[in-house]
Amino acid sequence: MDINEVKTFLENTKNEADTIAFVTGLNPITLDKVKEFVVKDTTAKSWMNSENDAFFNKAHSTWETNVLPKLLSDAVSKANPAETPEQKTIRELTERLNKRDEDMLRNELGNKALKVISDKKLPIDLEAISLFIGLDEATTLSNIDKFEKGLEPWKQSLRDEILKSGSYTPPNSDKTPITKNPWSKENFNLTLQGKLLKENPTLASQYMAQAKN
Image (cartoon, one colour):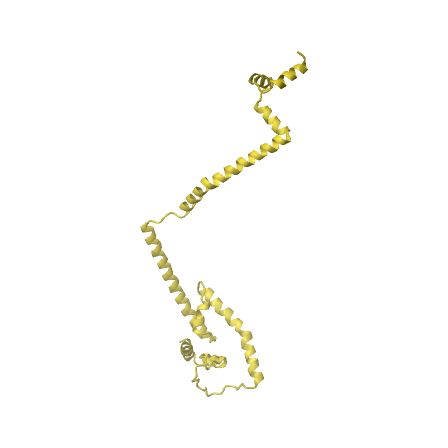
């Protein structure tokens, strides 16, 4: 039997078990041969990459669905452990004490700011004093200083306007009492406010409190 006859025989019996076993035995499939085939054959290599991607995507999806939520839950529980009743009581008490201390400090800083503003005779409404209160005394005083310096251009502009209008009358020895509240809406007057703060700070504070009410 020559080679052509062998080929014809194998072609005619290629689906028979004996022929399949015989041909497979001539060139057995090994792991090394599969690796070599995948590396060298472009189609096989593309198929293997596609299979790897599908496997990875499936594994990643399974991890996100089954593993990740538990990891996140454990991390949150570890970072924020549940409070016991005793721990909750201590936390709430600590928060109340801190709030009380903050309120006391803010009240002290408010009184300090009021005194400094009165001493400087700054035209500030009592309600606005809270705007100058900082984290501590130094910050509060710094805020007042910044405001005072910021008023200088406005003061100079006001003086210039008064001089230009010719309505300025030099002060004399007789101080005319101010009977109308210059902080009230109907009698609001910056010039009289400044005059009253300079001549009678106590009355000025009373008028500002009245205007607030």
